[in-house]
Image (cartoon, rainbow, N blue to C red; front, top):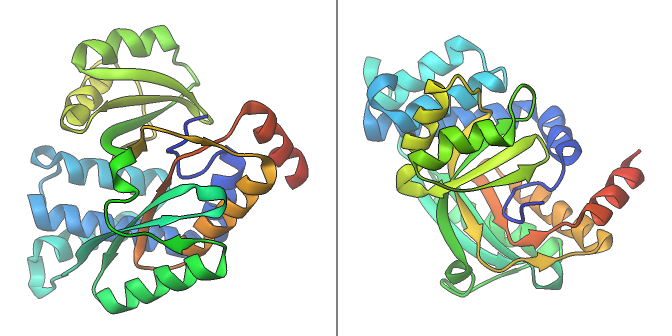
Length: 253
């Protein structure tokens, strides 16, 4: 299981999305606004916006909400948005490293909410650089296994610059250099291979293998962090073995 994934199992991820649809939509909308602000409202000429919109559509965000977000981000119609991007570093239970990505219009609020979530859930805020050195910015494309084989992916993605293809809870995960994300995503489209998401994420170099108890604590901490409207993503270096994943799923039943 990929340690940099925000959640270790499909079940955990779906439970969060199902219980917090409003928060999920709000964060997806924020991504669209920022992408439109930085690269303009034309999806054909703005790959970041294209992927933000695709992700929102796959999470059933209404088209009207998406269109309004693009206009707000691009400053069309008098509305405008202004967010600051902040990255916090931290440690979770048993020394699991965390990269906490925020988009906020209030830096003081974001800092307070991140610190509170960490403190109340067995985590600590880390000094800048103490965690980030172990993470690299990578393109991460998630492909559903249905109707797609690993050979299909290798044929389409490796020539376009993909670095590796890994098993994922939803099928496969294609890892690229951040600068090659659009090229690999385009290659998949040309090969008629559907994908769930294409994002730039922070991927750890060294992972920490966790038992079920540690994993539950880390998930609880990530849960609390993502409760904040200002927190967009949380990346960790937790590594979940198949045995631990099975134990987690059994305890959830």
